[in-house]
Length: 319
Image 1: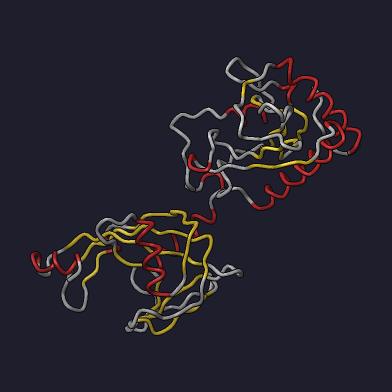
Image 2: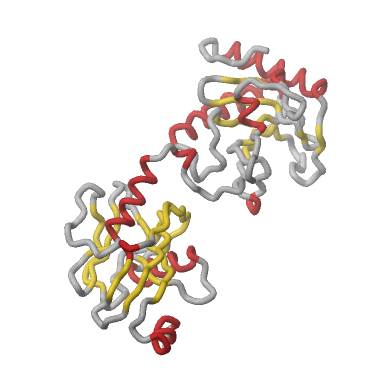
């Protein structure tokens, strides 16, 4: 007997508050996966939370059970509750559903109607959804549409930024300098309308002069970074790689990009580390240290000079 059935054994048909998840799964064309069940209506894959699960666990399990797909990269796009989510089931059970609506950024596997109540699984264009949607599914999809319409920086995507956080990389990108910033404007080696790059304030022992590349607008991590802006950051990263080879005479170049505390992120603004590499340099094995502005100045000046000369049309920053 399941958890809800046990509670129903005590409550009977009286109203019960349930908690669950629904998941927006999209294909490469942006179409939304819907499931048709025995009553002929269509809805999002999803279901009720089991004891001990997180909402994300529920979302992953329900999609697998109902569609055969494995999803990850979940983003919460909304919570649905209230009078519009009051249901009276065919057996007389009454529920008030609280549903977390997620969008899955990745999925793997082949569609398979694993649930015996599933009649069909199909991807639908968001503007051509079937008229016979299950109660609540229309509101779930509307939550998703509102999320898509928001500026990307306002979307709730895996944020670890503390309340009142003052972003140091935003300040650098805006051209600010004040006592609380380790990075000075003289450290900036590239700035255009979308991307800024500057010599990092902390170095590893054998990789002096490494550079951070950041978007000028605030995006916390890779999950919410617009793809087009990611391409701009990569283009600047490539310029820097050429500059490192010419200016530093390094044997190679490495890039690192960290997301969330478990991924090594400690500044809550998307950034790419670009390192000059040398044979047996043991990057990340040593102990990094904070540098002085005087140490960084010659590295920044040489990189700026090379970038300006190599790309006469590019707005490499002058200080």
